[in-house]
Length: 108
Image (cartoon, rainbow, N blue to C red; front, side, top):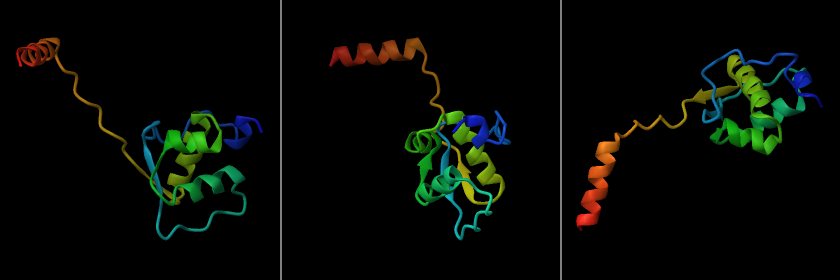
């Protein structure tokens, strides 16, 4: 099936907060999906009974990440999924600090 069919012609999710490392989990109790929900939406909701990252869900569904972002965003909007921020970005370390650590290790 073509990706634009799965996303109903949309290329972007309704939420910009969902990235590849966003963690998804089904809401409890989850409202029932509408009868118009597709197989991929049902599968995504079922696999998110436990905590799962967006990229893991895309791999399991064998769909492009961009498609799963749209599907997940729709399920978050409808109250079926909860999105949690993934791992925070690590601060950039300065080259001087890294050189001091390396010199210290060499001195041991």
